[in-house]
Amino acid sequence: MIVKEVIDTSDKAYFVIPQDADDLFSLRRIIESSDHVVADSTRVIKQVGEYTRPDKGERIKVRVMIRVENVSFDQSMDRLRITGIITGSSNEMVSKGTHHSLTVRVGDSITITKDRKWNNLEVNILRMSGDASSFILIAIDTQEAAIAKVSGTHLEIIPNIYSGRSGKRYPHATKRDAKIEAFFEDISRTIVDLITQEKDRLRALIFGPGETKRRFYNFLTNTKEIVEKDVFTVVDGVDVAGEDGIYVFLRSSAMKDVMGSSKLASVSSILDKIMYLVHKSEIKFAIGIHEVRNAASTKAISHLLISDSIFKTAVESDVINLLNSVESQGAKTYAVDSSTDIGMRVSSLGGVIALLRYTLY
Image (cartoon, rainbow, N blue to C red; front, side):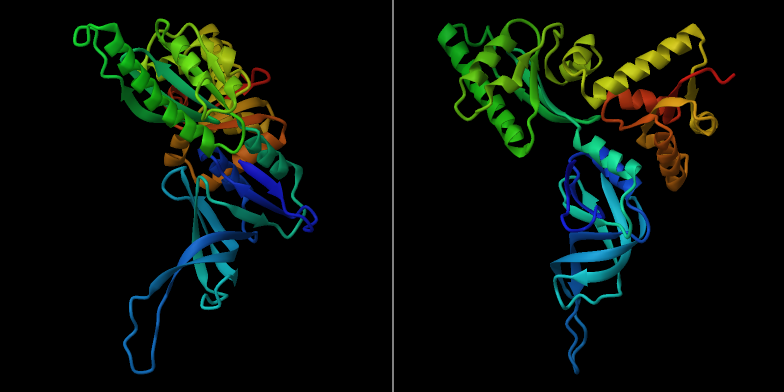
């Protein structure tokens, strides 16, 4: 999340741009009733004449400020719905005092203002989201390549790119090399687009069977459009290409080695430790909303993992209050979604699981 403090507000306002689903989850935890939120939106303006029938109206773009009455996820964790009363707008045709709903998605910019100074927990949630690292993953061999972007704990995979190369169909080395060069160019264009979209520095990891990954690395470092050559790293130990290679990498020990500072690697390590405790029958963990609540009441939680599936069985506001309570006790919390194997594992364990400081039973 891009976070900037608004000057001359006595620590009461922040300008933010969520960059992944984790950031939207952080905003859900921060924004509360009576806050003021400024964002771009649309509004239908109806033209009404003295002797004419009202028309359907024209939808216009407008920047509005609303006093928040309610905030919730809009059926999924990739959209946040904020409802309230308009207290200001950039268009005089939009009346103050009327109700309005804002839908905040990844990439939307908003300004959040509180009537008080932000507390330490709220500021820490913002800063943790702002420190989330991003990675580009490239799983490649001579036949296909898959490219994925990991932001926080969210995974986005771009459809496979195929080389069209076949040793039997193109027996001459020059023809095969031409196919590979065109294949590399297609992949590099996609990578350049991803790097250009990122405002902050990211890392790109290249892996797959054989020596194709190193050949592609050399191709990238000689590409004029790519200025920062040192963002690319060749990773050994993952001998699968394409979309399957992405998932194999995310379950491998190599992922923890090269992405050790990332949220995804941290969550994977915590989950592995909990599974080890389960295997050893050491009850230093809590699984499910009821066990986690009991552990939270004794301040026993050190790390908490939660997936989007929890909202199917628990009240959203109760979950948010639980997370804020646990984090105020010094625990670290991580929100994951089902786009990765880790998210699905957490979902299969009731949607919420905690690592404890000590045994409760």
